Length: 112
Length: 114
Image 1 (cartoon, one colour):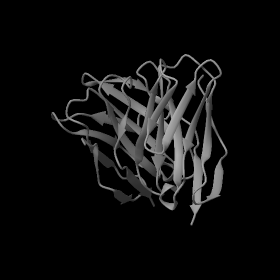
Image 2 (cartoon, rainbow over the protein chains, first blue to last red; image 1 turned 180 degrees about the vertical axis):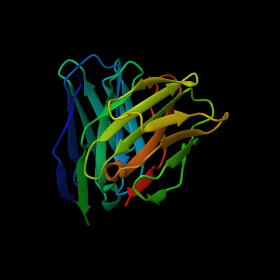
Image 3 (cartoon, helix red, strand yellow; image 1 turned 30 degrees about the vertical axis):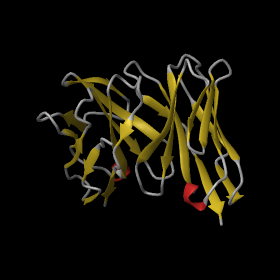
Image 4 (cartoon, rainbow over the protein chains, first blue to last red; image 1 turned 60 degrees about the vertical axis):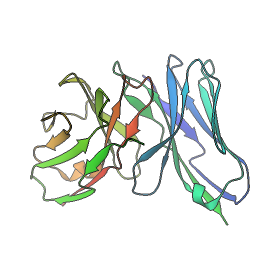
């Protein structure tokens, strides 16, 4: 059964720092991995989708990597800003219809 | 950019009452999903829907739950007799092809059962 773990559970950094969020999954037979952002009490905003054939995907200050063989993905945020404060979730397809299995998320706080 | 739209954003209901949560998926998407997130917990899969029928459901999705696509645009989740533990954020999502090209989620409905 696929399980997704995210470390750390919470992270507080000063503005301007570069940071890395980690995601691990137990079953490497995935065809993609998706990173989401969730603001308090709000919906899930897709940040990056990495297909299994890719190793990296970039969008602005965000860079996500995927290492299927080791069951890991990282989300790198460059030059963090207070507006980046949110919970970041990673998710991989699980069931036969590709339903997503989520990690519990990393709650990021960027201090001005 | 196309969006998944959910209504209402917040619903308060008495225990034992029926509720219907509504979603309008992206128009050219073929797969539809409901997920829920109890406060402080992981987002959990409830049910997937394709070609006008349930394609997969989790153990959470018991007989109290049902889904329907009553017309060409809406996708609904009905909870027949709400319990306190049904209080959660409910998310609708849609995909073009079973998640191969990523999911688009709605902004959620916060359901509070009192």
